[in-house]
Image (cartoon, rainbow, N blue to C red; front, top):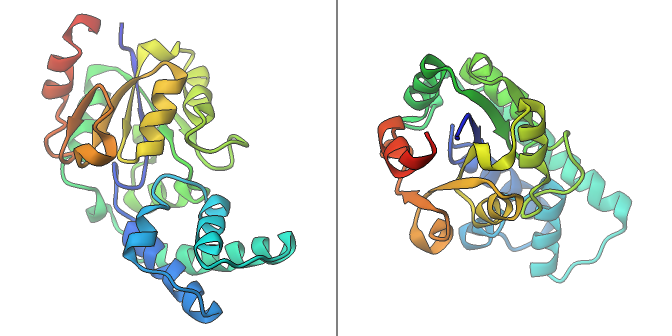
Length: 219
């Protein structure tokens, strides 16, 4: 039986992708590195430290560990400052409605995000009350595609993975859900999340009715 829902944050609940892109772009420009939207797509769903390594590999740059940490911290400072511009109007269409519906139906709900700033984002959205558990980049050591963040969330919910549905917009996120034994809902194009059990183009289409209909044998 499905008793819990676990949501990624960026690209599922809200879209901070543009803020991340602008922060990485600003840092890369300062460093004289190439960074564009095509390279930015490769950062979807992965941690900040993994992201800067992707950018460095692309630019064939090698730095000391301390320098990498300093630069990732600088990027984070740029990004966190931009979060102050977010408001409760910045939910992706359909996301708030789904969270509200799940609360009304009595399901357990967790966040499973690689972001270390998830709590701040939820606060800006006034969304914290929707979640029983917040799993973020501070909760586990291994980021997606390792299933650790989702396993952390399900453990805190006191549910088995097969009792939970994961909502993800990233290929690595769906990989993580599958690896952990979770049910999976992909949000986005087939070439990115088509290997999820069910896929929707956007959160607006991923209503509780549609999701429950697909997984009807588990409710």
